Length: 342
Image 1: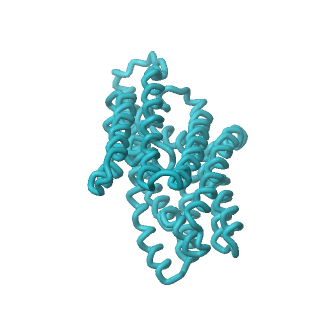
Image 2: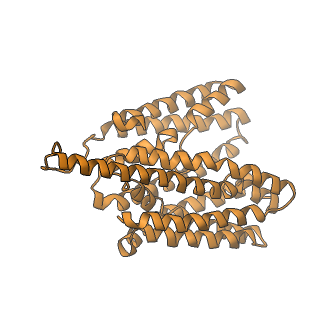
Image 3: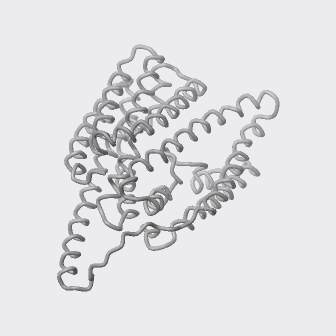
């Protein structure tokens, strides 16, 4: 939220520096305390959705400042497509140390990951520094100092604050539903099918590539039916895939439905981001911050309950509960966002 008042570009550049420093420390030490500290601070790469860690909302808000309103959904979707494509390549690269360990010590093999982080973030720093920080503004010749305009502005601010409050409540619900499903999903594959790290690496790599593809496809879907309907249809499809996944009799079939769920469920992130930035006139950073904070706040509830079910060898109930919450969230989502169509 602080970045809304300051230069967003500097925040993103600062994150790159933090990440480079943290990766350098991790490369040079095997001290558990230091490694734990830099892992918490730097996060080593991107968040689960490919953004710049705790500065992901600033990244999207800055992009929002640089594009026209009519291009929001398309640009956000293209941005997410590139993010997921990069993440899939990164997932493949992360399997290299396992092969290197046959020729060098295990410690040295896995430290090579940090060299990759340092290298790519230096490239990122250079590219971000070259971006021109020219926000697109709408010309307005209306006298904003008139009493009438002040009253209009006051009413709009009240409505926007109400929208932000509703967004907070909406994403609490979304966070609860995702908490039951996502954090322990790799562990679910391990418990139910005894999948190893290599198997999971292949599944997640393919799912990220497919998500990159679906982000591009969503651009054309949004043009046909609008952003709000695109989110609803794709995420309901993702819900059906989730149910089919948890009842799958084999790991191969479960992996197929997980990849399909990722294709449908995460491919509309760009459309969702465009809708969130549209609920206020000039508080995109605040709206995105509330969107992320409220979701993360409630995300921690689900894994604890899911863990209890897993401990009793119940690998279905928590996902069904999560799917029920997600269904309710999607109904509320459409009712709220259909008036902000982009």
